[in-house]
Length: 171
Image (cartoon, rainbow, N blue to C red; front, top):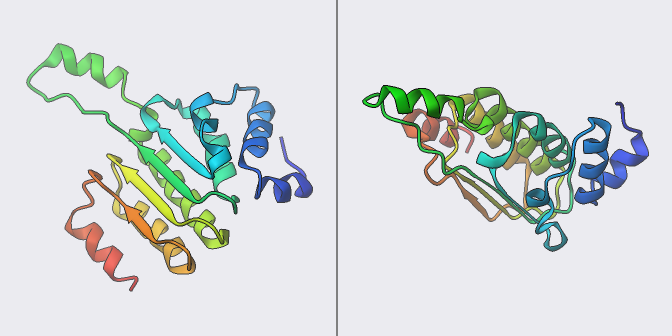
């Protein structure tokens, strides 16, 4: 399951082949939604449709990537209110993997690493993700190392005052 140095170096400039390779190594099928816009330098994912096991090849490829210009990870999941107990039980079972602390942290670390090495990444959009302070701190470390990023959006991420404070402390 350990990839060669050459494969990793090639993968930095070819997201699709590296992603396919990592999926094959873990015996999973690459997601068409992940590969849909890669030829245009765009990774745009509806994170609600990605299972926990499918995140690792995406994140491991993203962290070394040097060719993407635009990365968007969106979640449209609406947690159920406590007023409807039966519906709450059904919704908890269907909660997307991106809503877990571990996946959001790994995503932010992968983006941090990508920002640290990428000469082309200009746009990052994170929408509707439950980002925590440690997620934002990891992401900001990459933002500080990057000179090409023009647009960072965390729309509907409920960053809050503490998140903004930790964001502004990096500047």
